[in-house]
Length: 437
Image (cartoon, rainbow, N blue to C red; front, side, top):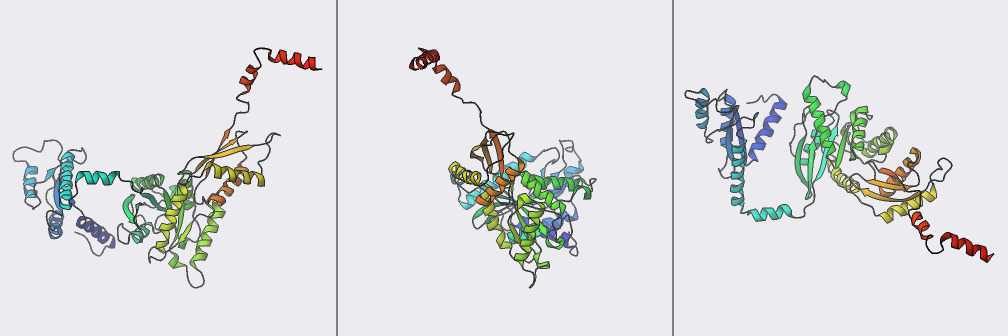
């Protein structure tokens, strides 16, 4: 039962109904201590209408809040409620206690039974399914959508999926937790995560535990992502401090970042093009966050769908660059050119030598410099990083350069001294030198 005049409730009901239509199993839960309500009866009527054949969809009723067996006795009102529920038409109710984890084994057995029936209906054997699981398939791209509240993150997700998969609207804070959607873009698997809007700490109501949990959920989704999409609001005109804080968290976590300049339909016109809009965002990023210079910026309008299709090619390109492995030979040829153009400064009157470089891992790209010193000046490291990004196109991510000091002494020096001992040794050599005089 919902109020059709409330657009938010209408969206919620439409998503619930769509989920039931596309499911193999629908679990209809009720409070066994309250009994059958009008909403339960109306929902059951609707489920019968869309039920289709029994082979395609199963509806099971869960009677919740039945801990232990204290409710099982003669003249128990709970037993009367269960008997009444059994007459709804979806078989016997399954007694459970979600809080204490009781009855979950019965649900697992039901899921296994439905899975076996579906395999038989589709003609899929267990061996074929195992072969599909072990086949060499591309790993899904983990994509997290981040940003402040009400910048259009959920609208962007719906525009990418081309369906109303998540709640969206003008009301801030509609998304309360991270919603993961498995999706396929041109045959390539994607795990798309829509996250809650992240407000500054001073703006949050910390008495509201839900918002704090939603922010933690969003940051958790960012930490496991391959690529993070930071959505900006064109109406703000300038990068907000909170957006820079989100970008900084993404970079420190070692993720690749892409900026979506959303709501361009509100400012782009005949005199101000989307290219100029993207260039303005890029310029602001370079001024306020130099590490993210030349970060890919995709201008779009997720509400109208304009330029939304430009995002995914940029996302996959960013993931490929982020996971790229560069050969040691290529790296050292680059290092030789860089050192020739601008050698490192002397430290404590001693020449600084960078002997060679190697990549220790990708995701994020991490490299090890072998030097005769334990550290390099920060300005020189920034020079190396900028040159490296320009050469290998590692934009929109942190390039981690670690320093390892090589041993100063000759590791074979001890063996060389020992070789002088024996017949003659250094004393015999001294006598021969004197005799030659």
